[in-house]
Picture (spheres, each protein chain N blue to C red):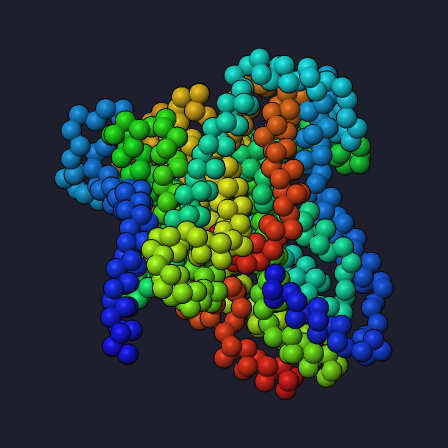
Length: 296
Length: 323
């Protein structure tokens, strides 16, 4: 975000007559390509939403239509009449994603603060460790994790998908990189003189300073937790505990084979909240991606 | 001086205290599972109830089975193939868009909206996208068949789902489509981190847009491009949702990636935990090698935000000035 400012400033500082003329032909090509790519991004979702309002017969006759029809309610009834219960999925996904996001941003900030504000012997080694393990994906440890959870009888417990979020190395790394140049130790010292405890200083002074970084990381943590299919699919076998992506995978099943309209309906239900949220927060999300070049 | 030293010692214990939650959670939920996975890879853990889990007489038997197994090799081949086919156009298109969006002489209006729309697929649930594309390319009726018929390209529906190369291609396309916007945003942030004075100097010297891109922009974002390559490769090695749900790894295992293979070994009714663990460890080793390359790359970077270090920037400035 901040890096964008000098660019605009320096361009404006060039006198108008010195700016080279735009090549209009090439510029048109650029816009055509960009518009094509934008349509490519939107079209599949548009087709999905439109088809969720059309009857299976209509879709069979013309699978592609850009104009909505009136079978939305009907499709919804067929969808929920079978094993698809979007409210259960929505509830479970919300619990997991909110819980995991809160834990990740809070404890990652705390760990980052520990690395920035204090001098301790193992600090450097700890930081190297975090950078070293940052890229290890959860998938390669799944078998051990599943067996561990299975042995203690905790499969089908949502907490097993929430608690691991306390240790998020890449978020710690990001938070540390943000806090390092931002935190002024004078404020911390002043608070100490006023008699505030270290924990209180973190909660009341440092956390507010970290708000922009927390917002960015919270969005991405929430989205990746919401979209996660692998771990929930491994751990959750009870239908009452299914998350939204597992619900979606049920649409792949044979019972929906001939119910085109309701499959599109189910897909739409799972992404509509995401699309709405994205369009509202897009400014922050785009800026956040640029900042957090670390997230894989 | 003495006082300061004293206070540092007094406070340093909080460094440890505040790291405890992270360390404990890491030990339980990540380090222990890693070690446990390694151990399982050497045992006979198979089936729903294994009578007595013990280390095999030949501890590496599972690894040998996996490494010589045609289906694992096929899965590895698919993974790299699908990743490669998606990454090459992904980085090229991302570079092209970066060149257009960052050269202020183009001054592309509405690029904010373009970025929002181009990045959008990345945020949508991959599971949904996989099933959506399955519906879009279904046989005999689907929107894709409709488009091709109305364009006069085909006279009767094509059975897409049984074509191996077509399904691989679609999985690669979905990966490309979901990730090029992300790559573009990362590259743009890298370019914005370059000292604007270099561009000013180049413009004054009368460098064309193409020259600026190849002689200033590209060398300056070399590190971040390598970084993108490695993170994308690690992500690609774990590709699961799309191949698993698009064609369930088929047809004829054409879209079975390493992750789908591991999942199927352990959780699709065969309960081969030991072999799945061995396969995971092989993937883990590949990823560790890649991560160490990444670690090495990041040591060069000052701030972790993708800009090249000040020192480098200066040396490029000199080169840029000379060119």
